[in-house]
Image (tube, rainbow, N blue to C red; front, side):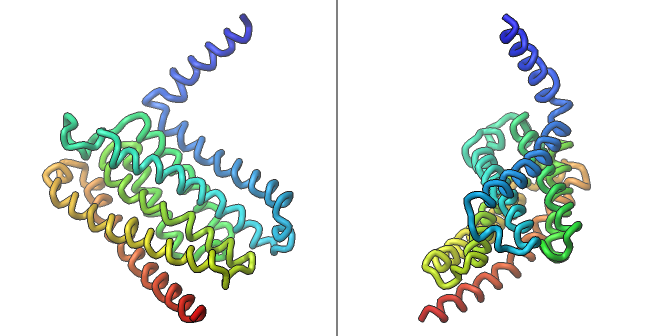
Length: 266
């Protein structure tokens, strides 16, 4: 009976507080930040036990090793949620009642909050160890992403376009794997070459073609977009443009890196 009572209290707490509409944004941000901390600590522990090369890394390399584990898990989480909400769920469908630019759900808001928590934690680490974990382009990328995601979470405006942009996180695991292969001395391995090709294709689809589709979707639904708050319209139009420019610059570097790798192998 005592166990049943505690279970009922836990379910009540979950429904009445943690998953209540008014508390979802704040709860999810806290979940995101604490999840980052937990993943960082678990990665540090398991890497020290199961990866012999981990102890041979410098202090900064170990910090980056752990940090990349956080970004990888966040990327997998937000990519799965984004793909489901954008392409599988009917939440943002044109057949859905109401304007698609104002559609949201408890799941979509919670997932955005977790992502905001990640960006806060990761940006904090980037600034604290600046520029070891990334230069100014990473700071700008995280700030723009955090502001846009937080706005969509708090206002429920433009969540569809926010999730379209977040699908681009699908390239993150490949980028991180490339760093791990490099640090492990496998730069000349077949796995490193395959990884480069996969990154090229994933980047082309998720960060180039998908953004073109996003701009086309905004064009088709601009009558709904312009009913958003002015700041929301600004984020929906400007942030993707800035990120697209950065994506193109990075894509050019990926092409040059892949070409260099292929040339060396031949």
